Length: 460
Image (cartoon, rainbow, N blue to C red):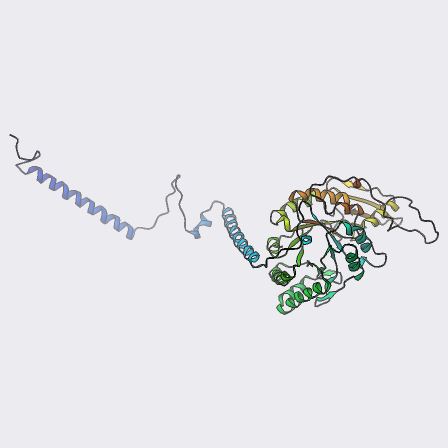
């Protein structure tokens, strides 16, 4: 028979007494520790966070610069974070700009061409008079061109008044010989030979004047049945860009019902130019890929190949290729006695080299041609130019991006062998005509006025 007493039953009660003493002692110790912990939280000074090697911790933001071993690195990180945030905000703004733009389907001639680039030529009135090179060049070039951009519109005078100077001879010639060519008159803020940036800023900042300019452009295009406008505003200050963007947005809204387009000339490399923002407003951006050395700089390459390719790559990372046009130069600068340069056409430059017996050299560092000579009185001429070879090299390098088109600056100053390069399919091999300069029988250099026999003594 089993016992009903508990296994650990102690009849004397000594075990229970000992357990009771142990329990009360433990409770007393825990109470003392708790009181001490609470008191430490109340009266103890805060200590620095312990830096465990395998853990990260945060210091108060105001102390970060003091604690950083290299505060400059911290400032760089803050700047990068700020720039990233600004890029996100700018991307959002650009999406909103695009969403606010009126949608429309462009006529075929104004749209990017499948498999090939658009061919565009700039035409100027001031070199188009009787015997003018620009009009003669237009006649030769027209079969190769999709668009012509004539300098017919100006902002002129102290108030940059809107002026119109349409050359009826060239307009009638284009309508008669190639009715399908798109004509986009060029509007420039140039007055008395200077780009008037401050005057442009005042005009665009005035809502009434800005609206009037937009309406005046609409009237000209409608009256002459033109296809759009080219905006060439230069010397634009950073503060002017928001007003210019607002003006172009308004112009785009006015153009939408007519199917007209806006093309905008942009500097090739200006850190303050908001390329992406403008590309969301206008139909095409025209990158002016020349004047690495200009008439006011020391003599040198006008568009060195390395310079061109490096900046082009930067631009094409931020611009959509199918709305980007690359403007290429074909002209010369003649620096006289290492001073300011005169602008020459290609034919004039070749004539000067021939008459002086100068040897044209190809600079291996820039892939730009040049020559130098002295006149009998000791005057030094240093001539650099862009020809069909430089244009081909530039097109060949840019075809990788498949831009919408190439524009020639300008008709009348170009190497005549440039024209067959325009409007071709992408990645065209070098044509045979680049090996020689064709004789131009309509622009002959005449020495003397008597005699009835005309013969070609030699090619330029």
